[in-house]
Image 1 (cartoon, rainbow, N blue to C red):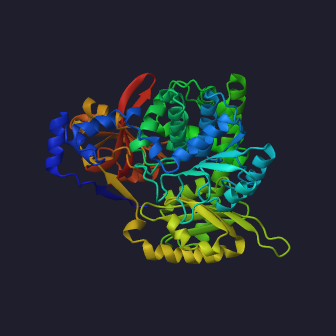
Image 2: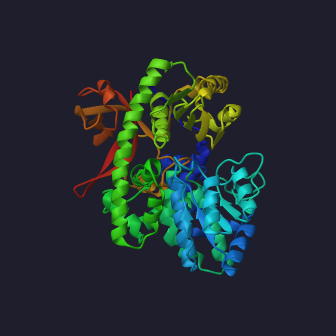
Image 3: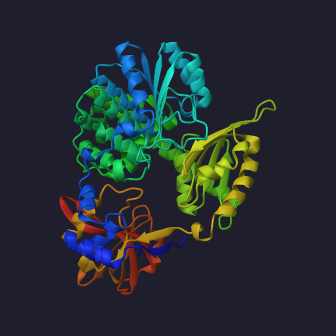
Amino acid sequence: MQMQWQLIEHAPAEAVQRLAAELNVTPLIARILINRGIEDARSASAFFHPDFAFLHDPFLMADMDRAVARVVQAIENKEPMLVYGDYDVDGVTGTSMLVLALRELGLDVPFFIPDRLRDGYGLSFAGIKHAKNLGVSLILAVDCGVTAIKEIAQAREAGIDVVACDHHQPEAELPKAYALLNPKRSDCPYPFKELSGVGVAFKFVQALYRHLQRDELSLRKFMDLVAIGSAADIVPLVDENRIFVRSGLEQLNLTENVGLRALLEVSGLRNTRIGSGQVVFILAPRINAVGRMGDASRAANLLMTNDPEEAMQIAQVLESENRQRRSIDDETFQSAIEQIEKACDPINDPAFVLHAEEWHPGVIGIVASRLVEKYYRPTVMIAGSKAHDGVNGIGKGSARSIPGFDIYNALKQCDDLMIAFGGHKYAAGLTIRTDRIGELRERLQKVAAEFMTAEMRSPKLHIEGEVRFSEIDSQLMHYLQLLAPFGPHNMRPTFMSRKVRVIGTPRVVGNNHLRFKAGQDNRVIDAIGFNLGHLAHRLSSSESNVELAYLIEENEWQGQVSTQLRIKDIR
């Protein structure tokens, strides 16, 4: 699919020159900073050196005082509590972090994570029944709860209070929890709205420690878990999320968490510098795998154990199930492609709604994301059971979207067709009777056709600036490192260069990767385009009029560090 190159040009020239002079940097670096809302030396310093000192007061969050008071009451009265999490990385790390933080206070609180296939997402009636059987009087919910109106009502009837730490989009009606911590609540004055579930749970722990006059800086030991959950949930890496992930990555590289050390070992990352990319593409899928394929509590047990032998055993299970998950991913991906090519119009359909009985519900979210990347269309994948004795089957679905199209609001216009749904603008989950899937497809395509413009249907490559190879120097590399960690709202800068020479003969290596040497200004730099072997025809030996769009990174090989261009597109 042809990408549209769009140069980011909203930084005024005079502002660029002023900041460049103030920081003693090149205009290119100043433009990159201004594109991220950094317009003076003070904000640049805060951005480059995020620290706990810049965290917001946790008691600014609606219901925080009630949440802390209720837990303090439970501690004083020795009431049995239960931490109730979710089965994805955000929920698992949030659950683990909260249990470990309570242990630091001398509390041994059990946890419960629902089974994806048996219990479904979030607070469930089965989970409430489990809590009742344990005799708990207080549930601390992590990464769920904001839409659990009936479930929390049942908990109240059973004499169980619920304190929920959630970040998903609330409905107009909120559940009657004892306390509902969610910065997205319309009545919540908290200044930063984009925390992950583990991020909200951390703010709760921060408030609890402050109330109990415990050292808040001791919570740094849990930042590796907060970083993993936040990065994996693809939240904007600005404001508090940037502090969490930057400090958490530093902690992760020195982690004392026995389970994480074992996971790094089996993942082949033991002696590797860990960045957000390693978290998102290597660690997070392994934590996710056991929840997708079976019991996610195994991942939580890994993150909470102090036994190195147990940790290694569980880590190896995660590694094995991740390999199995990848195999199922690939089979499902190919099946979905066949369905799109045969039953859909890949060019003109504004959205895809796909369904197959044999798909595994645990992988359809990942596969939907891969389909969005391939076809650049909002995609809903539904794994549905067969109808029995005239009764309709029930489908479990995952939806993923493209920039600019709010899949949550689109599904909201189809909510009469579904049993339940929830999520946010780029990702959602749903439950639907299989006989309503055709209606959902028709309705969602109408909504997408109405709201999606032709401009939205083509992927954009946002380029920070045009550079010459002679500008790629140590100062630029230094500031690119300070910009990390990268993620939504702070993506790794993409640059472009014109009139680049191809040095030698380009090669397609590995799994369709394009490797070549690029030359300009008497400088030659190694270049690699992952999965871009199909663009090899745009390069020929000695070609001297190539335009490249690329990321700049350091490549370490056999102890040698060199600059490398990671190619995004060629023309």
